[in-house]
Amino acid sequence: MVSFFVRQNDQLVAEKLAVSPWAPDKLSGTGVCGLLAREIETHCPDGFVPARLTVDLHQPVANAAFDMRSRVVRRGSRIAVVDAAMVQDGQERARASAVYLITGDEPPGRVWSSAEDLPMPPQGCVLPEGSPPLFKSGEREWTSDFAANQNAERKVSWHSLPPLVADEPITPFQRAAILGDATNHVCHWGSEGAGYINADVTVALSRLPIGYELGLRADNTIAADGISIGSATLYDRTGPVGTCVVTTLSNARRRIDFATTTSAGLADESH
Image (cartoon, rainbow, N blue to C red; front, side, top):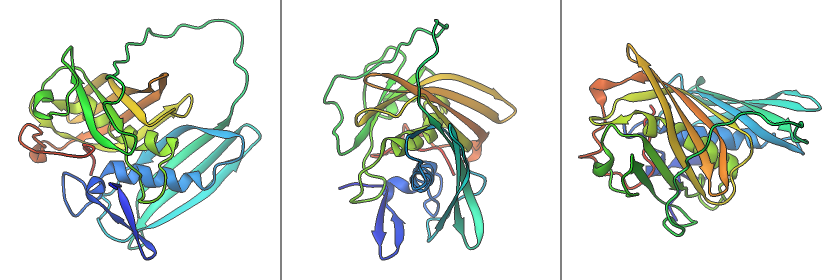
């Protein structure tokens, strides 16, 4: 079965899905975000749910051996904070911070929220054990054809992710973390390909995803002088789950042209 990583002795080794399309000797941001979420989950307090994950991708992570480090920063009665880091050769390559909250009753009254238009492909389009992503540009139909989606229209993607680590079930939090990094793809994939790389990723969750399918709808892109912010809605078949935001840097000289590059897995635009 396809996965992002496999175990070899005491190490996790990257499979194709976890290798960066920018450089084959580096790990993808999707894989890095997934592993940091996996490490953070080892400290999940009973009765708490993850409400926010922020990942700083401040150095490229080599496709080589790495160590994971984590600690509980604070555990209160209603809020807990957990930090994690990925370390190579004694240097911190990427780090993450997660906020866990206690659930409770919603306060009375009504507040404004936007009307959600969350496109979904027909049931059965992706498989529970993982499938290539589907994309929708503007009013066009869903397709897995990358070339058909290389345009300047608003993008939506639909995913069924394989396990993060082989022979280990992928968790809802891991799914959300991986797709948080993919926000770059729906927000910054334009008519000439993908030309931005993630500097950080934030996923804010009102709840955990339900089921094996997740959608990502581009909401906005704000760019100036080679720095761009992309935001997207994360959702499942029951409705919105949360909001994803990426801060990105121009990487125009190493732009990925998806019209000529075949990708059978989850597209990723990180280091």
